[in-house]
Image 1: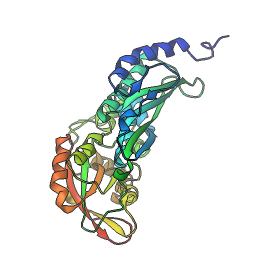
Image 2: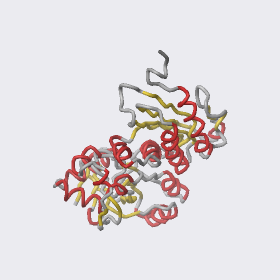
Image 3: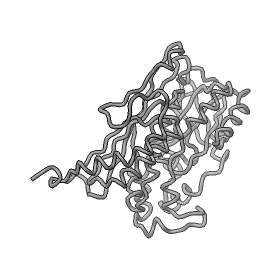
Image 4: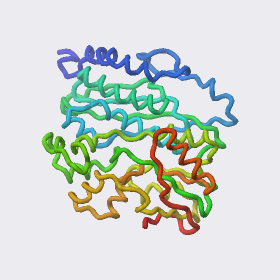
Length: 341
């Protein structure tokens, strides 16, 4: 008996690392010290010394049951983008710049080419967010997971000068809410998605005219990363007073998180076009509208609050970063919470 016969192939692990190196190299920043394969990742903090009070911000997350769709479609090159996005968007939401990312892949069996493809997506997410992929772990779990399945999670660390942390403390009545378009369902609510739609290859390969693509393509679309958009707003001299990453819990849970006591957000549902995937999901599942807004991003992945006189500048900055902005509401005095109208 040896380790390989027990279900863990060390040689496959070595091959996975070799295959993923080309993708990891594309994410490197000057601050990264050493190479891939060490016991830990090293990152120099020399460049943040000019901050008055550099503060580390972090985020950790996974892709939830969205990975089930990747299994069914045998498409593994974008799920890594989702994993990075869920972490770095939270960091950007606090005003931070993502510095580095580490991933963790648990699998029933290590298929080196598949693992390298997953990491290719992780690397792409890091490139989009400017974070370096400085390490990770691939763990075989024979007997715990089916051989052809895996789970993916990760965490990111970023930095922000303490004075620039977005807290919502200066939010005032009359401030304007700007939403940034999502790329689809992102990485939340897939347990409900999998109840509404039949999870078979045939079902996911079905083309829908209203989507302009197959169901699988629409659902597996990677989560939008908003790091560049928020940096563009800051570089334009606009202060983001409050920010909300619309993830699990949708509008009703996430928007209040950016509000101080005594401030109430009002969002106008007709201020933008809800993407077709959400309309199809609601119709097929006979889901109440309130539940949709309490579960999904409904087409807005990030919402920021700015002063009324900064709206135009913020909108242009978001567009310059390649994102699509909408003026979706405003802040009013009142009980902390959100009203959708």
